[in-house]
Image 1 (cartoon, protein in one colour):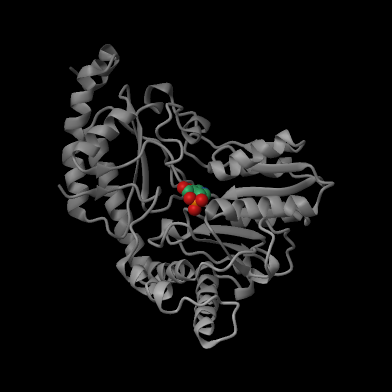
Image 2: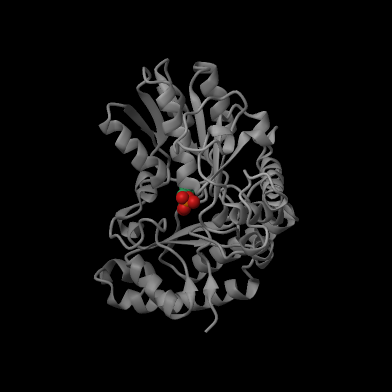
Length: 395
Ligand code: PLP
């Protein structure tokens, strides 16, 4: 059975061209970039070129603004903890209710250490309440952490506007943008913004797992998370992961090639999927209709049906999707993102995220649209909510 992979916000398949680019850096050009002989020079050059590529990918001004990390979570931790350590007198921090756990759980930890945290809400479409966020900024606010695109709904937050307005209120407040779900899905141009930090992760754009980057605006100070050698200009110790750095850079190049056409194609497929499901399945509801959404993501609630059961039946048909962020699936806790949006209890437990990629084909989408109604019909028959479902389905 062939696999239809619609869980690209959890992780993506590594592009073969990326894997090919990485290979020589395992057994041939394996030198330590800090050493002085030719073999090391090759690795050093590869890291330097990769830094330039990631600079261009994020639209940064200078390659020196790019630090390689191990993942998106490390980038977030470095920006937030590294900022707070340099401003010990400031005890106020702001984020949103719908961030990835790498930010939310860090904020919860910081609260235990005496920080006052404000968590900004979203409306029923998944759009952020920017005015509420701005109303919370004061002279004690050390950092504002806002994601660029939400991993569960695809909602894009106006991070450039937020950065600009926060700085007008307090120019010393630092801005961290978690761009893990935006990188490769929408063009990014960080240099013309007031954003201080931006984190990305290669495995979300067809690069390898275990490598990420943090943009740090020139002149912005940050305390290192990992202390040791002088790598990454003393900001992040540890011998550079050369094959993975090279792989992330190649993935960034490939994501940028034909980006506009590819995103239009993916959006069309996503819209076809949404329309197909909503027309054929009477108890299906679109969870996010945010003003702007990344083109690959949709989140659909199936009233009175258990999401985990839908996923298991999809899996039997070779279709991979998700009922929340990968880190929370498997737990019976409903998604914190959908709860923040006020998604009603009736579809909260039956919500499925489909996330497409450049490998997704029209045939696959047609197959999902044909398969899903049978699954939902089957599960409707065993749902404890027969009366409610009967009213919606007209049976
Ligand atoms: N931020 C967002 C929005 C994500 O979706 C994820 C991963 O799902 C992360 C951060 C964490 O990235 P990583 O798995 O590279 O640590």
